[in-house]
Length: 275
Image 1 (tube, rainbow, N blue to C red):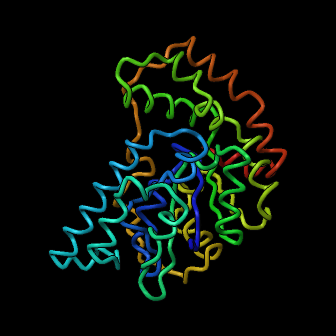
Image 2: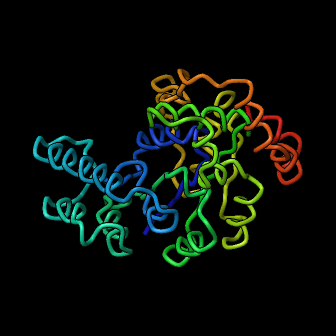
């Protein structure tokens, strides 16, 4: 089904990774886009209608690209297949998910990167394993507090009228902050060797090195033609929402112990490269 899966973390460079891998001649993403949200719709109650609307929008764009003969459309789908992806009665089933990746180009490596997958419950992780037990997984870890602040800002900007307390009380928001539980859960279901954990800071200090590590992990050939200057690491960074001292203190309490866990699990050097 998939040749690689990015699971997070949110606000930790996953968009940068997606844009860079799209430049690799062997990497392929479905017409559904970077984030399919299949497993979180099923297991976390993510807004199904909203996610399906995004899939439909991306599928329509793919059909338009095919009509124009866009060589970068990269879908491999017939128009009928693209229309099928948006069917209400078919969406977010196992067969639908398989269908998204069924027409990759010959020799292509199909991938998906949905950052909330890191926070899936055990049933969700087992669902991933049931569909693709051998898939290589990519997980980027960022400084826990920096990531939480960036995530909260995005939540508040995407949901006008929502207050910080409501956003921080959301179980999924809290689960995203818990590296300890998330890493343990994924490594209890998958062979830890299948999961490439990367420190966010390496994207800044050695972006090409990060990409070569990802290539080696997921089975892509070495490629040096990435446009490393075309996208910022966090191109959708949210900076407008004000984080008050009280809110910051709440986030600090929420991520307490996470930096220590990263150092304990991955080593001091790795932990020093999260920023």
